[in-house]
Image (cartoon, rainbow, N blue to C red):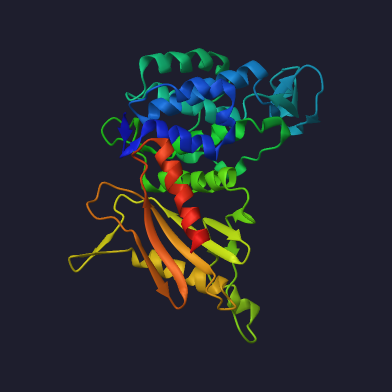
Length: 352
């Protein structure tokens, strides 16, 4: 089984499949059966399949502002440009109008991502051929500079909902790119902990929602500060937001999970391996502020993606009457074993 950064590539597919349920549709099933040497090759296969499906259904179009010199009036007349045309003896009207176009941000991102994957040495020739077949239909669509993409301009609704998974994948790819100083060309870097952390977190939340739907709540929730007495609203605004990755609730029992993906699970402190202090302090704040009645029924779990380190955390503490644990999830194993590990977390918490 091929690995990338210590994770079986096929497991990354399964993580994506949970994070983006659309991957479980029949047209992607053949991808799950294939072997991939590199994560970029996996992404190329998914993108080729998804983009081809979009071409078949029709690429998303939206109204784009156009400026053209026309013989007949259309839209709004641009007076200054029209006068210039007349002075140059051009019998054309300068018009500004909106027109439905495939050359929009959504398709531009798809094309840009395909272009970079086609140039990536980690992508197999057969996958590049599949991407090139689809790219033919993007001839009239502009490419983009990855660093200049305004991801916050993307909004999904009924007409472009199918793009959400593909563009999330594109962002994962394009934000993992580095620019070489030698030739000024882009190449794929090993994906950073930050990129994998987002996928890791989203996968765990989706897994619990799918397989433990009997729980009363499964969500990424904010925790309010347990403030007492009178507090000035202006001062309160300085407090940081406590945003949990995952919060499970069964009756009165609550488990707060922070999913962590690091190159190194533990920190070194005076030749001693310890938990990341910031992680532990943060979880302590989450648990104590959530347990406002001091019931002890709120627990916390720091869940790390297991690395190849000799020592990995598997410990539970009772701190101020609340249980706080640190465990690792081994992603370098068959997916069935990953599922068993996640199920065991829920079982242990419920029975504690």
